[in-house]
Length: 244
Ligand SMILES: Nc1ncnc2c1ncn2[C@@H]1O[C@H](COP(=O)(O)OP(=O)(O)OP(=O)(O)O)[C@@H](O)[C@H]1O
Image (cartoon, rainbow, N blue to C red):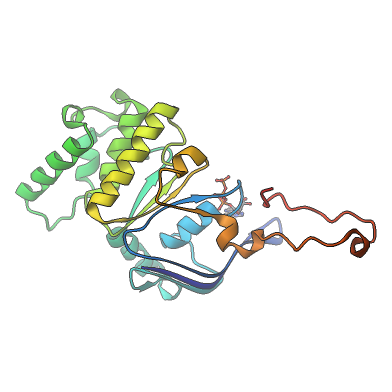
């Protein structure tokens, strides 16, 4: 469902080009649930944004659910994102003046009947344990409950592909564990592909698959160790990207 080949992505900053990602080949299947881990600055969020069609690669190919994103116009990528991907963010991104239910109603497809909308809303609020909280404003909910609302918003249309960027980053450890298990369980039940960026290695272990950025991003690979005599006595620079 995801096929990446010979992808490169860099950013321009202060007149310099910063190479961020170089991925020769990476593919994942429909229904896989992956924790994406790696040090700060290793390109995790950049990769998520490429998969969501928010960013485009400098070169190479990226195809998701049959959509060749590297060839798409901005309008095509917007449409792809609306139909194929659900995003979950660390900071929930709920509209503060709307109730939990109204936040979800905003994303429901217009072709769903009123009855279907009602049934789906009730089902998802129940599955996430929020049936009594539907009429509450975000500020009246705990952070864990707000993230559950954001999860409903991402999942209710059942897009094939869920992208979560540090979804538990602003929660305490107990709520973080509950939210991560709930997200994993819902995606498994629905057969959705899930890619979650997390710094928390304990939470990453809940996932059937963990992928470290150094496995896919060639810019993070360690150079083969040189013998001291080859180094001419001068220590080589180490990259802050590389994990020991
Ligand atoms: N728009 C941009 N312009 C310039 N540099 C950028 C831009 N976006 C990201 N970067 C740089 O790209 C690198 C990778 O950023 P990214 O956010 O993908 O890393 P990350 O692995 O998700 O890090 P973290 O774990 O800290 O969130 C960083 O060095 C960052 O400063």
